[in-house]
Image (cartoon, rainbow, N blue to C red; front, side, top):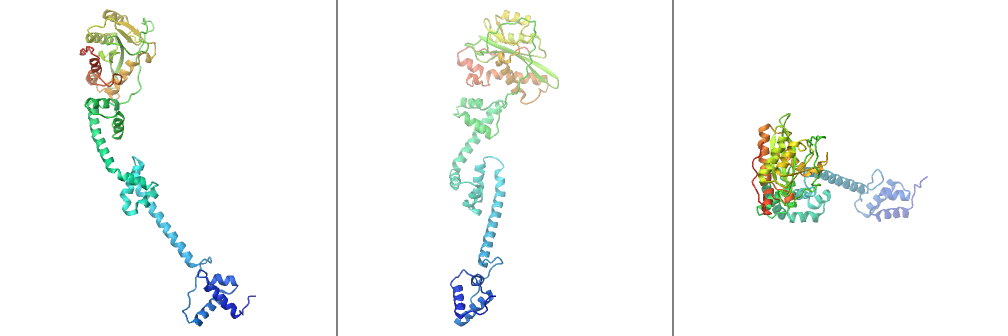
Length: 405
């Protein structure tokens, strides 16, 4: 049983122990000494009265035995942390609108710049996980970026002019060449970057459709080209092919071409509503008018029935042309003509499934085929048109006469 009678010295020492420990409480000292808490409190009160001082406020404790001041301090810290988290949540909600598109890092910098007065740069950079030095560098270089943006916008306007002039078909290489011809020194990579930024796109190649119909019984000519689609001079080697032009829901027109392998010039062409041999003969005749003579030239084609016919062979012989044919079923052996056809349809149809009607098909084709020789730039020719290339190599260039179509 606990001792109810304590010596005077014990009481004095207990009170002195309590007073010597500012952080201690009545409860903690009483528990250490094995004394009733109220008993120790009364000893402290009597000592205060004896000394003639106001009663010293006792140090309250929480239900867990911790000092009440420590609990309040912890609660205050928790409330402060809750406020910080709520503020961080609000900041991130506002920042989310800045991250919808574009450069994510630049968007973060812009958010900090727009909200630094309210939250402070340090706080925002911590929440958005960016370095303050990077933000200040971005802010210091803002005038330079504004100048570059203005220059890009001006260049984009000039690019759109070139793009529109060529029916939206030109990509970065041809646009760059056009700007160079206008006296503007601009890098192709910069043109490509500005076109991407302002969403200016050239037409892209789509899947080819093969329409060659072979005649197994027809006489074949040897391959005199061997996939070498070059020529040392004009009027030396040609390739020819037929492609279809979709018209309306079910109709078709057909285009036959004759292309010079030296300058990529379209020397002859013909359009008709049939694929009979007369179509390719008309194209050959148009090329003969363009060059005045085809004597000694090679005419390379696929094994389509029109090109293996006796009538076409006779037309070639009459013009002094040697026939050359690719392997059966190999589009690579006549790749240049196939590529020309794909480009022609891509740039004239521009995503449409077909031409509106026959008149639309003929006029659109007529315009593009003439512009191909005189205006359209060719990557193989150093971004020159076929006519300009022939002129630059001091080769007589004869204006293409209208073909039968």
